[in-house]
Image (tube, rainbow, N blue to C red):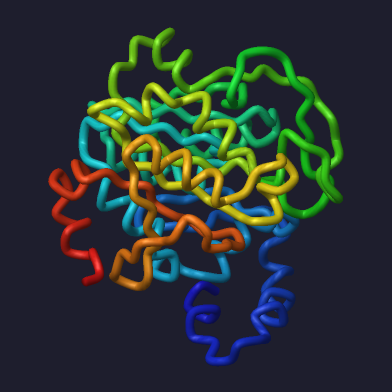
Length: 284
């Protein structure tokens, strides 16, 4: 089925192929999201389904993130959902790595734990709370439509099932867990990026600041009274430059550029010294 989707030569029509295949997928199925990594598929959930319709080669930001994670690294996934990113990250960090995944939605965590077990990844710490700019209890909202990854700290159309959860800051969590260095930080929190980074100012401004991969979207950020520009300015104040992956190249991104569900990288000069893959990709 994957080969058929990859072969399909037209911009439209993959939905028709999926309907033809659907009878074979009713009892549940596994999707190989990247070499050696599988997740349980779901026809009624957008994110796992996208990995059936596409291949990892079409995700240049994900591929770069894999190159930047090394054995023994400490990796954080904020907004881990069912593990589509963190499974491969944990495989790269290896048994000597420290991997922490955060997601406040109970159903997503159950699927994440199941996917970790499927891939025999035993060392990932899965935390049942959200990261933000303060500590306390908050109301969050789970999705009521076909994209369970859309859960957020604000109510939106189709994201309107309230539940209570705990909010902690990245800095407090690292202090409580005795973590003095984070090597890679991935953040996908449906518009609340500024809150996460405000709560991690100490980690982000440290001499060993992590590589940061984060998703930004103008509309999602505005629901928090924020913007991608505000997120980029905060990271810039911590010593980061902001880049997008353009094929095999890294290109700087201006603070005022708009974004629609785009994965960006925040990188310091030290990261370019530490990672040859970044120097090789930097557009000149």
